[in-house]
Image (cartoon, rainbow over all chains, first blue to last red; front, side):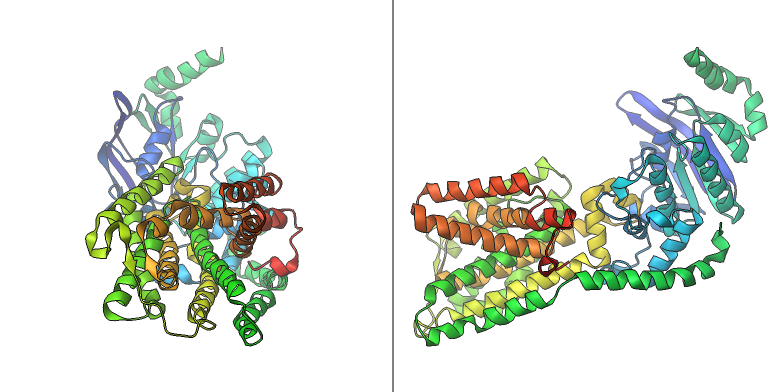
Amino acid sequence: MLEVKGLSKHFGGIRAVDNCSFSAEKGRITALIGPNGAGKTTAFNCISRTMTPTAGEVWLDGERIDHLRPHRITAKGLSRTFQISRNLADMTVLENVICQSKISGWRDLFKPAMSPSEIDKAMAILDFLGITRIAHEDGSNLSYGQKKLMDLAALLMSDPKIILLDEPAGGVNPTLLEEIVGHIRALNDKGMTVLIVEHNMELIMRLSHRVVVMAQGTVIADGTPEEVQKNPAVLEAYLGGALEDAA
Amino acid sequence: MSSYDTVDQIVAARKAYNETLAQAADRTRVTWLPVLLLVILALFPLMQFVGNYNYPIHLVLYTLMYVTMASGWNILGGFTGYISLGHSVFFAVGGYFAGMILARYGVSTIIMAPVAGLVAGLLGYMIGLITLRVRGPSFIISSLALVMICRILFEKWQFVGGAAGLSLPINDLPVQWAKLPYYYAFLVMAAFGVWVAYRVKHSKFGLGLRAISKDEIKAESAGIDTRFYKVLAFAISAFMFGMAGAVWGEYLTYVRPNIFVHILYFSVWPALMCILGGKGTIAGPVVGAVLIVAFNEFFVATLGASAINILATGLIMALTLMFFPLGLIGTLARYRKLPRALNWD
């Protein structure tokens, strides 16, 4: 489904992502993990073209997408959320979500901002996520967790084929975390392909079918959660480092 | 509770609820006031039958011109969040284009105004492609640079009269009625400007522009072609300025660089009106235009035509924005204190 080949992003002399290759299979949950500064978010940014990669190719469903502008990539069916929830203040949750509905051609531009069918669809998504009661709340009045859910709702509005979630459970309370895990799993059960960046190891091991481990900008391991957990290189670079940080 | 599969049930349940919401929005919006204003202003020149009201007619005309421009500026500055202080360039381009056609072929600028608007809009589109790559202070400076370039260009370009400008023929109507063609032209343009702002605000395009003004990266990743949206917004606002400039040239009977590329009157004032009334609202630019023209007129009358009247107008602006940081309409709407009559959104 999504294939990343030799992706690199250099900031001056720093190689944030260095010749990184991995793929996300259709209908599965693939996790991208690694210690802080491993280049996970940068890789995400390069895939969704929020940043221009220095080198490398990104293929979606047999189509090369790394030269497209971000809105074109979204139209192709790849949508993402941001690590720090980016929501549109002074716009209601409903407007935030409908903002992400597909627009084809410039004729669509002058259609009413929110058509009844779009409102219905958006409300159905909000209902699926259990946040219909905040539909008319201003985007800036939400709690951190609600913003995460709103991001997820907006993502679904564009009917994506694959969703890229950048720390969907970062900084949310354990109850909401379980809820978000449930939503991701429910989406996946319906055939949604998911690529997820997350720090919460327990969550990753529980949720994902496949884990890609990054360190220092490169992929050091790739396999099932069980395989990765036993991989000495991962224990060395990732878990070992994390334990030292904790101590 | 419910799952993604039962979409149909949810859709049915929500439909009734959403209809009540839509009705609520329709109930708070007012259309009778703008329509009434339009009728009153259309009948206002009848006063000429009972006396000489040339000066009040001039003032209303002048205000209507600013309503056109401030509403146009609102589309870029209010909805999209790109503050331009260079829109006098498009005012001048419209004025010069229609002025040259009038001087050479005798076609009235009132007929040529939409064409002049298109020329200004096209120029805006091309300039937008370059300058809208940056935002914030950099964009403001680029718009100021545009004014400098344009002014020098018009002053040195002998084909359009250089620094002396162009003289335009005076119409041969009796003095009592001479202003009326321009008056009605500006009335139509002002109404058109407000209508366009309303249509844009309620379209997908407007929703996209609002998203851009809040977070451009998010908007782009939401699937909005931010570059095209921004440039189109720039072109539409330039169109309004071009139309206004075209008719203003014939009304003044001359087109001159130091008048038309005047940064205070045709770049800063429309922006200030929009900010004073409330950026991103429909009624804001109208209220702002009326207030600033009225204040300026009042201070010119009481303090004389010196720099002091500009200072006084500025002081009023500063005080107003201290207490109404989002502009009059914007702040009142935020605190739900806006009189229904002024909710044109």
